[in-house]
Picture 1 (cartoon, rainbow over the protein chains, first blue to last red):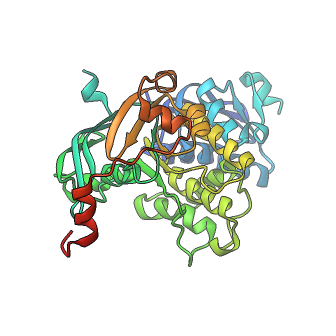
Picture 2: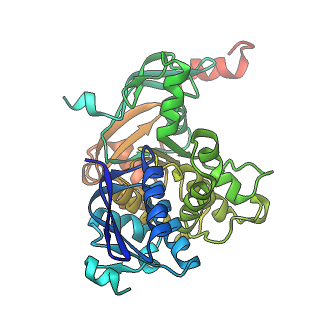
Length: 109
Length: 266
């Protein structure tokens, strides 16, 4: 099921995505990530349940990361599924994003 | 039923340019996730088949269904929906010369979506990175080499993450390294972005590397559709001629030849 949820853990928010992230709702994902960055000092985007992501979804992640960099916030992709990793690798973005195995590691980024 | 799932389903297609029949009784079906190569010599009808599937020509006979829609009878809204879901990289690039590379690539997103401008900029630049043109967005098409034009055109063709990508002669005029990179990229686009890809080419090496299945066209007819191994081992003289680059034996019909040379209305 396509879903985005945000879970606050102290000064850190985990944004969880699931399903197929595509053009039809990626703007919602973008907004959820930007909102979380507005509120907290750190954001981890958890991607283990994402079975497909298109470029508009990747763009939402890129914009979030850039926003975090500009405002001195922590940002990481967490538990990246194979399907997401394949798309990141296509544009070599796997070498750009901080990518970590779990939320604990994301908090330490 | 396999037919219902086919992304492209062409049956009995016939095409004429004036009095010349270009395609005859062509059946052509492509399943989701497949990389299909249309192979054939010059004048075999490859490009004509492609243009019909894209809805640029109406068939003289036969039906063409793309993404489940009979495109000869589709209304404007249906055609628009199809155009959102397909990408085409034409042989010559077909970039708009008055727009920068970045604006060319972003054009489909600006025309066909209501995405935020930040998202559009990032999406189009991601695709420039994918085709190894990262940072080239401010150049004009006239400042690019032939290979770069081709890659920019591919970036534009995939900027919407199409379900169905058409690629006309990806290797033509490219150096071997860039050509091999493009072959690799075609495979990765299918795997990562789940694209179904139709490639028109006469480059055998490239065809054998990327194809799941190959349709061999010759003089407007489908000689065969099969896997790479099936085509390589085909027991068909004309296919073996194509594979071994043997010139074809032209059959001369004296009556027809004289008619072509002498009659005003030939």
